[in-house]
Length: 344
Image (cartoon, rainbow, N blue to C red; front, side):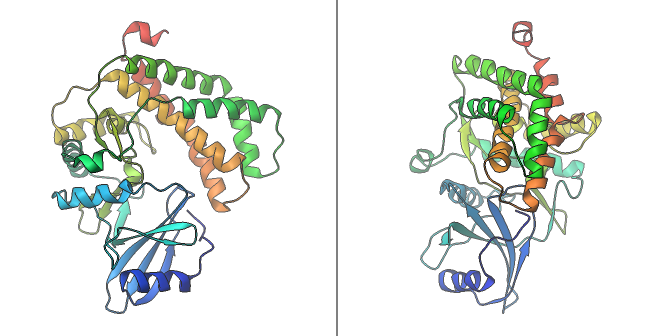
């Protein structure tokens, strides 16, 4: 969220005092991230302790805080775990947001600074630990499971019809509607490819593991002493490991073809040898584009709220059509599949 939510600093400070026992000296809003439903702050206490405060609006799955806490407790040092309230909870509420408190780690994400070779290897090692971590049955039962649902694909089809006949007045909405119409054939084919690959995967037994589900460079935090952390566990899911592996060399960000290839090589040095299901990899790369398209349409076409986040949302979506970005990589992945799937 790039614009500060309509919650006063005094409200935030009161909640941090009441629920976490913190006496706040200063509270600074940080205009970070592409998620219009999440806001973050830096909180400095009177004892010089520094904390990272995250506000999350909308649907909230408690496993999003339970999972990083579990992983950190299991010894995965690349995970920053949420801190508990005075009564032992991993979150509290303020207005229509959930508030989650973390230790503050000074650093930059992997879009702001280029991850080094070491960072990509470390990410591979860390993600392998995540994928092989045993989960308590009670927790596992509450984590969403992959179903290869058509929900997002159907939404995109609906929005394609909507923009053909709906006038918009907001500049970001106008630009998004124009882009959807200009790229109608490409988007339609992406939806079709995702549907076909989902149908194939439903007929094959697949091993499900714990996945982060959004492990691109923007969710890699590199601190001031060059340590790597995995952040933003908002949507953990039990799914084939390719749900996470699709991001490695997947084109999220601005990279050359060689950089994408290097990411994969270095990552798998850390992750280790593994059999990658190329059908699942291709499915997730197409489906992710579909989900982003639906999410940006919801953000920009169904409301005029969001301020600066609206233009940022449009820019993020438009960037997917650039060379070596996610659409380009998805179609290159398609070429690795059996001929009958490539040409279907």
